[in-house]
Each structure stands twice: as C-alpha cells, then as structure tokens.
Length: 325
Image (cartoon, rainbow, N blue to C red; front, side, top):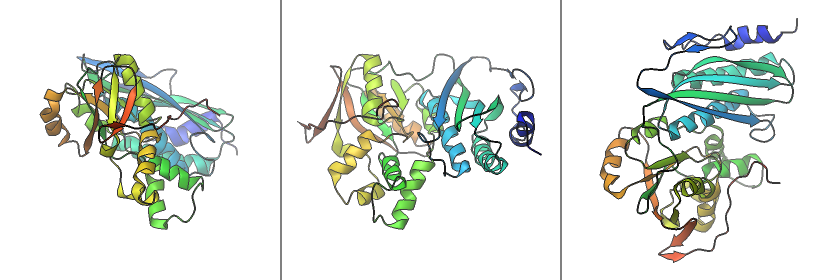
C-alpha cells in the first residue's frame, strides 16, 4: 500500500530520540509550541537545497540530509547562537521509502549530535527539494552580525579553504587522474562540511563582525564590508590551504589560492577582530577545537584588495551566484 503524507511523517520524521525540555509541543499539531530561555534572543535562519543545484540526484540521501542541516547550522554558528530546533519542508517526486529511510538516518545523526529537535514541517509531491528553518538561542545583545567591522580590525577564517570546490570538481569529473585517496578526502570535505558552532559561541564578545562562507570568501567578505562601510586587504600567502588542496592543484599556489577565495559551501567562519582582542581570541578558540588564521585586515574603502608581499594582485575573482548562468 502506498504511504500518504501522514504515514510518512509518523514513520520517518516523528521518531527522533532527541526530546528537548524547551519543546512543549512538536510534530503532530498545526504549530509547535516552544519556550525561549530568559535573557536570550531567538536566532532564525532558512535555507533551501534543490536537486540538480545543491546536490545531484544520485547522491547518498544520508549525505544530502547532513549537508542540508550543516548549511543551516552554519548560519547559527555565524551568529554565535546555540542550535535548538529545526523544521523541514521536503518535496519528493514520489514516496520513496528507501530514500526517506536513508535520509532520516543522516538527518537525525547530525541533529542528535548538535541536540537539535525536529519540531515540524511539511511534505509534498514535486521536484526533489528541501527547505530547512533552524532556530537557536543567543544571549541578549551578544549576537554576532555583519555590520560591526572597523578600520584596523584583523580578518580571520576558521579551518582550511578551497577543499569543497576541489571536491565538487572531482564529483563533476572536471578533472581526471586524481589519486583515489585524495579524491575521497576532497569529496568528503564537499559532502560533509562541519558547522563551526562552538567557534561561533566562543567569538561572542570578541569578534566585531562575522558570517559563514557559503558563496566563497571573496563574495561573502564583501557582505561584511558593505554592511560595515569599510574595505579590506587580504594577503593571499596567508590563506589556509590544506596539503590535499595543494596536491590537487599540482603545487600551484596561485591556483590553490584562487580556489580558496572562491570556493562555495565551505561553511567555515570569516570574522573580524579588533587588534587588542587577539590574545582573547587565541584563548577562546583553544577550547573550540578549530584553528583560525589571520588573512588580512580591515581598511578604509569599499572593496577587497588582494596582495602578495605587499604588492597588489590583479585577480578577477567572483563567488557563487545562485542566478548566474
């Protein structure tokens, strides 16, 4: 017998083991009833992933789920928020229960790790797509935003950059002859990004501005500059490049640097810190289990300047645009 919408919800989405005490009523009613802790603000973010755009049709459903949730949790991390709840709207061409079972395995594995409870959503028929809304808590007045960067602030990024773009190139077979072990590493970096939730929380009260890198560093940093009415200089020699990315680029530092600046779906954090907070940053991030690299500084102006050894570089780079051809 074919499953209807309510059968699917009951069988796959109402079985999460995480049951938060701040959820008074979750799946099964017209709305969820939730309680925000005293002294906190609610941080909310919504993202959509569309088959053929954000993931391929043959991708493991568990990885689709993990990538979708990671992308949303990364937005909370960029605000310094603690994840709490998620709702999921999923559109399916058909009620493929094997696909749903695998999807939910991945979704709940990640949700359980971050103690995020699924509180509702919607299922409907149509082209495969996902829309998630995540909600989290941040202490009153302590949320990280994009508009606080000031002249002289230092620019940092977490982790390494460029691996996701290299993984996508492997996935789309845009390169050939890649060592299988190297290809597996890069594909994993593309498929399974790690939202920097603890790092975001550690940056509260230290960073002057922050965001996550979803469309490429060169594009996303521009959002901080626009909101803060400042410019920036990046020293390309400081960009954090993995050994795997350098191997993928055949040791070509320029090629690796360009990938690091334009790679989308990295979900690392880019943030600015006043110079006098540098010591506090080192202490705070020592407990977050992630490295952060200073790659430049905020200047007057309104754009990003790339430099090497103090000399400007004429690299014409652009990040990802959802509506470009």
